[in-house]
Length: 265
Image 1 (tube, rainbow, N blue to C red):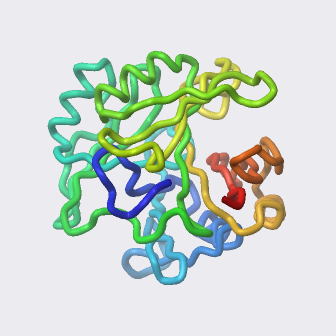
Image 2 (tube, rainbow, N blue to C red; image 1 turned 120 degrees about the vertical axis):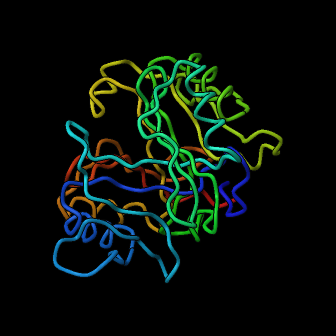
Image 3 (cartoon, rainbow, N blue to C red; image 1 turned 90 degrees about the vertical axis):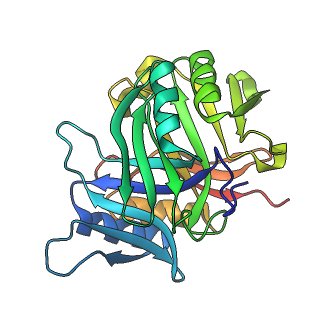
């Protein structure tokens, strides 16, 4: 489970890069019940925050990087963004955005792992991260699809100190690796990674990619809102034993995410 104490190595924040901020805000408002709070005044909506019941759950910004695809970026808590940057470089990763201060709020950096999967880190200042997690309309899990699970474990274990445990998926569909921050018990696992075929990485141009899993009260109703508001469904809705009912979705611009109604414990 993800919590808001944001221990080192745990997900703490996420933001969406989209070519149309206004349309993206409307889409996620319909699907997840989010309110959008733009930064600044004027008609040109360049970015802002999503809120659920007044609590900040994600960020949204105008996609400006040449050749970049619309996608969610997940941030993980670190004690020292500069030290993490050095660890990324030593482990064969790439620094996409070097460490930079965002006023008094914190210090961030963005990277690619050695196979191209993009992620980010956040060194807390006055802001530790989002205000709501693991509740309907908020982040409840993070997931990496990669063509080399062993390489991913070596890289992220070295950079973020994660511990890993493997489980066989039902129906012989392969191995799923659960991720837990260093020094925390397994009930604090916050995500997973799965090795897939390179052709399955087409949404990211063949590179590994992270996506967020959002808790929803009714998976089927959320999927109806996805398709009714210009998005599409890659898989599901379907029941996953011990996990819940889920669907892999794309927003109208191709950013991928999962909606999940958790199984009752």
